Every structure is written in structure tokens, then in C-alpha cells.
Length: 582
Image 1 (cartoon, rainbow, N blue to C red):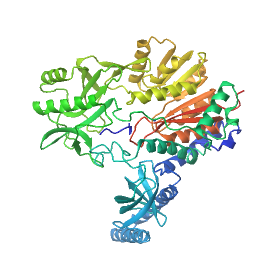
Image 2: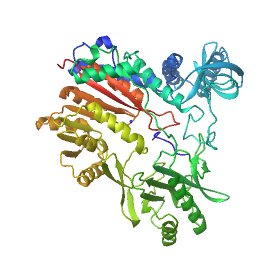
Image 3: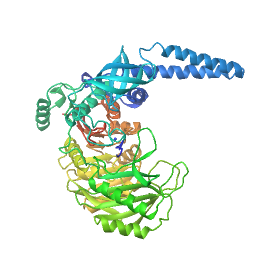
Image 4: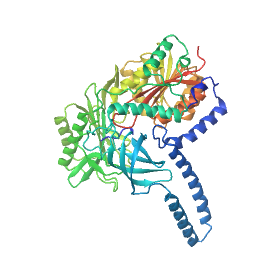
């Protein structure tokens, strides 16, 4: 099964009248916020269940500092003295752990009171937190403790004494072995509800935001009415509106791209997924979140490879040829691209391989080879060449056409991508007169959506190849009101400002780590009327919203979007407006 992406901080609402934080004061605030964020976000058990873990991480920091001091003293002692000190430290640590209410291998019956961001159930034994994979909120379960730390531990699910009404039988035959999906055992309706609550939790805990409690239908109408009347929306809705998660009518077979690692067993060439917690490849013939055509191509490539005696790459020895099989499918046009990632340029029997693929899978429009000879777990190398067909395939999101190359980034769920981008355009509030800047523009997907409704769009991206694709896609769609530039947003946007380019709306769609601090400073200095933040990581979204709030913006509403059903990942689009607008 395919891993998803994985696969992109505020005061309470009564702080909406605060004056913008600028200059050194703002930078200090940003730095302090970012220093706090890692310890707060590493393990997020929903519904406020992580206080024990945060305390644990603070305790770990103290333990590390103490060990450094002890190690410093040890280096000044004899080796025997050092060993004695180490033994003493171990004994002291052991005594501390013996005070816990449960020990490794103990069994206990616990109530599951929540679920953390990894999809693990959260329960407690005499106040001691246990994380239990496979358990759902509301369940009573019997568990076996596998590992304990100072303030929390991990346990294995043994029996379910009382099941949650949200529990279902996971339809995937290899669900327990594969790590690609984490919550197939939860009904889809419950998944959507949990993902919204996860967004709410981090907005409140990390972003220090007050979330509106009114029913969604009422708040949606208030927001629509006030937007039409150009009124102050935040005066009519108390807190940030977090809408119900936008899900899929058919949450299966949604992925348009497969990246399958190839290995070898006694039976020959295999390809599928890495077993949980290892780099052992388990053979797989079907994945329920992959498009069926992707499964078909991967199966055919493995079959031909076995027949032709193609060797699989061994990451321990660095030998063997075939490393990965990558398949991309264009949902709208039906075109397919196959990429063979190899440990070297020469492919034995290449003509026979290509001929067989073309014969059995006629909708493959492109067969490429990517050469990666590095000892790394990164999939692609630097060299890509076409073995047969075109160097791109074409697909549509909405009515915008895109050319997709072997290495270009393209959203893996095209159905929900259109939902996500449509919401982005809606939040941008474009009338055809605005200038928009799209930071982290990638191959121009959001930029071209925006360009249909704006006067001018400027896109910036640090990856040159992505900008090349973005410019090609603009030409492909005959859009001349969009300009793309290579560079870091925090460098390019100030240069644009010096040229007299100012934005009415800035859209950001950063990677999981969130926005660069200098980009946030740049946004606050440019002061657009609206900021639309597209996020693939709710925790860094909340952190960055806090900074923008402290800089003079109000978060109006947030829309979670389920891009990856049956996984713990959730995307979100947030609308911020500059305070003081009339």
C-alpha cells in the first residue's frame, strides 16, 4: 500500500483588536513561538490528552542536560570510575521506572478516551497515558504494555471488551501489515469528524485561537451575509469557524500515482510496500486506495521483469538494477506514464520490456527511465530519459490543463484537489481586479486556478524545474496574466515590492514544515487585504496563524479537506483578513 504524504499560532479572539507587531518585537515573538512549537507538536493526542507527553519532553530535555553534565564529569575520572557512574545512572533510572503503575509486558483493561495524530487510541492507567494502535475512542480494551517512558507508554491491543459504534472491518487484506493507511478500521463518517476535531484541537492548543461554537449552518450564513455586505465578519461570529471536513462520495481508489519499491525473494522479483517498521518489501497485487490501472501496470512490470530475469536493487549491497516502479495516471484523459527507476543506465532486454508493456497496456502514453545510482532512500535520481512515447502526459483539474512529467509534483487525489483549489479561489474573494501572489506555487496549479479570476497573478517557487513546468502550463492554457519566478518567496516578494508590485491577496501552500519565518515577515510587511493559507499540516498551520494574528490579521474560517481518506492526514484552507479594513 502506498504511503501518503506522509504524501503541506494565535491569541484568543479577544486579541483581534491588538495592534500589529512589527520589527524586532515581531521577530522575537516569531522566534519564541517556533521554539515552543516542536515540543508541542511532536505527539498530538486529540482532545487535550497530551499534557503528560509535553511534560515528558521537558523532562527529557532536563535529563539530556543532566547526562551531559555527568558525562563531562566522567571524562575527568578514571575509566573504572566512569563505568561505576554509568551503572549508578542505570540503576537510578530503573528505580524511577519501577514507580509507574504499569511495567513492560503487563496487561490492563483501559478505556480509550481519544486518538492522537498518528491514529493511535489514547487511554490511561491511574493517570499514566498509553498509546494503543488500532483502538478507537469510546472503546474498552485489554492491552499488553510494550514500552514505557517517564510519562507515557505504548501498548498492543489484545481484545476489545466494548467496541466503538464507529468500528468497522477494514476491507484491505493487508491492512495490519502495511503502514500506508492508519484508520481503515474507523467508519468514514467518523474519520471526517475526527479530522475536523484534530484541526480544532491544534488551532486551540498551538494557535491559541478561540473556535466558534455555533452550528455550522448558522455561521456559514453569517459569513456569507457579512461578506456580501462588506461588514466586519468577526464582529458577528465569535471565534474562528471550522467547517465540517469535506470528504469524498467514494473514498477508495483515489490515488493517481503509485511509487512501488522493488525487491527480491526466493520466488523472484517482488514489489509492494515496506512492512511496518522495516525496509523489508512485502509483495502486493492490489491497493484499495490506488487507481486500479496503477495496480495493473505494476503487476505487468513485475511479471515482465521476472520473465526477463531483471534483478532487483539491494539497498544493503548497492547492487541490482530495478529500484522503484512509478506509475502516474491522468484521471480525466486516461493517459498513463510509467517510470522505471534503475541503478544504472543499461536495461537488459529493454525493447522486449517496452514492447510487452505497449501490447498489454495500450493506454500507457509514456515510458521513462530515471537513473539513481546513489546509496539513498530517495526515489529519484538526477537523470531522466524517455524510453518510448512522450515526456509528459496531460490531465485537467477543473478546466485547467496540466502537463505532468516524470518528476513534476502533481496532487495525488485529483478529485479532492479540485475541491481544495475551488475553496482557495472562494476564500481569495476575487472580482477580476486583484493582484495575487502565490507563494510555494510549484508547477502553477493554484496560480492558474487563481488567474481565471484575477487581474494578475505572480507565482514564486524555489525549485527551477517546477517553475519551468509552471510556465509551460501557463502557455498550454494560453494564460498571459500570470508570471512565474524562481527563488525563495522571502527574497523574491520583497524584490517585487521594490518594483511597485503589491498584492491584494497572498496565497501560501507550504510543505509540512510550514512557512519560512522570513516569508511571514514579508507578508506582514506587504499587508495584503487577505491571506489564504493552504496547509497539509494542521500543527504548523496553527503555529503560523498565531504569528499572522499577532501581526494584525484575523483568522475568519478554516475548511478541512480530506485529501487522503483512511489515513490520518488532513489538508485545510484558512482565510485571514487584515484587521481595520472598512
